[in-house]
Image (tube, rainbow, N blue to C red; front, side, top):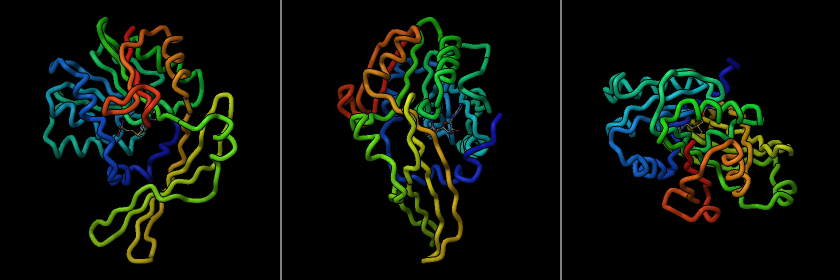
Length: 256
Ligand SMILES: C[S@@+](CC[C@H](N)C(=O)[O-])C[C@H]1O[C@@H](n2cnc3c(N)ncnc32)[C@H](O)[C@@H]1O
């Protein structure tokens, strides 16, 4: 397994005050309270834990030991048992669990971390192997909005922009992003998230998380799923039911 990119940055993940509104969305799609869920890239359990608290068995997997360690702590704190939620270290492009699930989800743009077509092929192979015959998978990416030529001209900048800032225990935590690099064919953005902890004007700590974000335009994302041999059963532009292609997110539900 490669080095854990999130080793230093993981502890800042749950401090992000933004509310995506996606937990209710996933709960609404899980109409059967007995539906068993597999979460790919479960991170610190932001989505897995509430789903299991609503009665679903959730199996989470993630490539980052640091994110999983925080997830395990939250599971213990919530007094959830292994019959309710289980998380493990695994790569979503290559895993075998010897069981199938009613829903497979990868919330908060997880699949955009996969840069290559070979990784996406591995992901779709694993999804097919782990879905029940009636099962559905829901994947999400962000909607780039800007046309390609504009993105190529304007996206990269060395300027930091503030993503969020919070006060906690007399200290201040900030998260900035810097848009370092962009490559074509396939189109991948390489932003860095820079987390800092401050007391007054003194910076106490800094952690940098470089992430690849593969970009998909609305038609491209649909084609990707169809050409992997799946049938699309739902599509949305956001978590409040925005039409596909009109909101900030691209969310697609599909079956084998
Ligand atoms: C933006 S976080 C999302 C976490 C969680 N799904 C949520 O909604 O809060 C992306 C997560 O995907 C995980 N990830 C990235 N590539 C992965 C891979 N190949 N296999 C498994 N997890 C991966 C990262 O370690 C990270 O925890």
